[in-house]
Length: 390
Image 1 (spheres, rainbow, N blue to C red):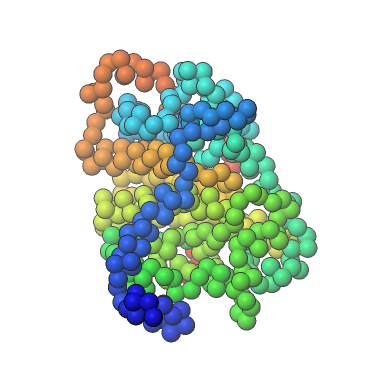
Image 2: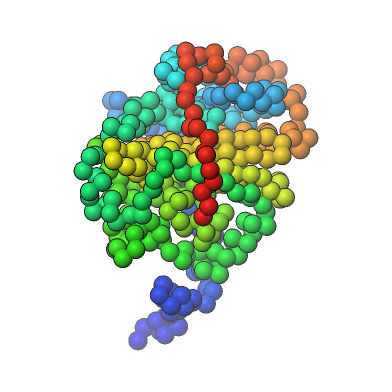
């Protein structure tokens, strides 16, 4: 026998829930779990143009300040100054094209580089010069109920899953530091393994959970196919609710990249819990696609609304996002969140320590826009009529 095999820990038994002893490998795995978000995101600072020439990645962001947050407007210089620490950031000089809903589709930098919108996370609209990505407007054109196959409601994929009978999924919870601590403790006891998988939670009784994969479900339901993998997205994350999150009422079928974007919001939840340990409210809702004879679990948009005692921070996710999000998008979100938190905690004021030259340049940069000044307004998801309990 190999000398190492003699002392090898027994494998985790999912049936009896026998757990191996804590080992150095388990500790490392736990630490690595914190890096899941970074591992799932795009990190390259280079892109290829239409002629396959390599060029420097350029990104930017515009904030829809429909909530008229004075703190953001007063701290424009601080925000842009922080953004300049992001290698791919470029300021925006002009909006050159709007969508039908009034959101900016294309922008131009001071260096005359054209950037186009690839995703929206809440009030933040992200732009890039990566022509290999799909524009947000093009993505949303697929999300109509006409694209649900008629034969889907007689398919094995439909029969394998628990059914939904509402056009809207909705959850709300108060997030506290104690809740997250208790969930971390619960997950640590299980070595960060879930007591049941999403597929097991979604599957009908007496059916094979293997047939309840999000990939099989979406491909059977939709008349169009994506180049991405479909996953079960939690409305309220496992890291918040633990075992209670493994419920079909808390799942939406969406793209792997939408799932990654939601991890950005969830990382901010952990940050805010450290600032507001007494708690804040979290509301999450998503509309699902509907066929001629019923509803599906395939989502179109998720609204993820954080309400602290000082401010409201809404995230909005395109559930069928085909683009792998860049790590820069996470940094933009966090810098914006930090400005809000520090301002309400009286730790920052309007920037007065930035060189005059930089300040004058930033005054000409666009950071905010408001749809009320654009061609039209967008239709939002209606409020839920009732709370769905876990």
